[in-house]
Length: 199
Image 1 (cartoon, one colour):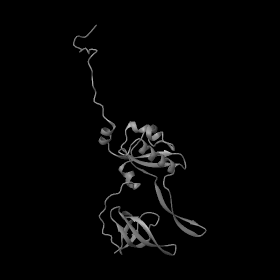
Image 2 (cartoon, one colour):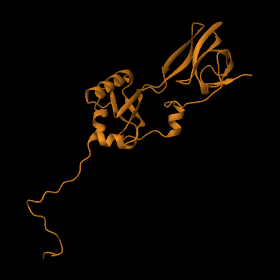
Image 3 (cartoon, rainbow, N blue to C red):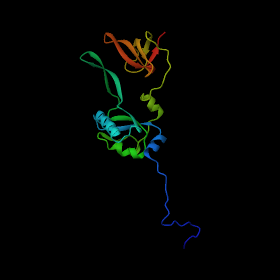
Image 4 (tube, helix red, strand yellow):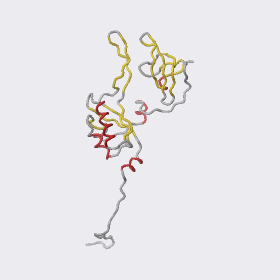
């Protein structure tokens, strides 16, 4: 039995559905930070390969930054202390991108990457709190720090050390501080948030 109220579509009728291009989709999305899992020891390889994928598929408007989280640590060998950088999160790299489902295969099929960190391998964006904790975003900070000021380090491996500012770079929120380390004065770069001015 046919319902006469239903409209019949003829064979020649064409129904057009507007389709968004990937560039339109990219403009609507907001860039967020995601975590990718890599094979052990393949963080640098995975980063280089993902950068190649970005160039090859013209994804520069979708994938903005690829970071291997590093941290400064003081190691002691044979009675000598040395400031070295090591991976803060082995087997992981962080990527800032405008994610959509069409990007999933490009990223997960990259050599060295095993997948996204998230439920069932689907990407889960980092929260604002996690981004701040990992220091992924630089916040413009107005501070009253100038060359010659004495400061105390309040965060990081040099916590508690006192030094004198030798250079200030407000564009990237970094200062160079001379601290006494290993029996001599050493210049170290610190973020504004890592120091406190001493009056």
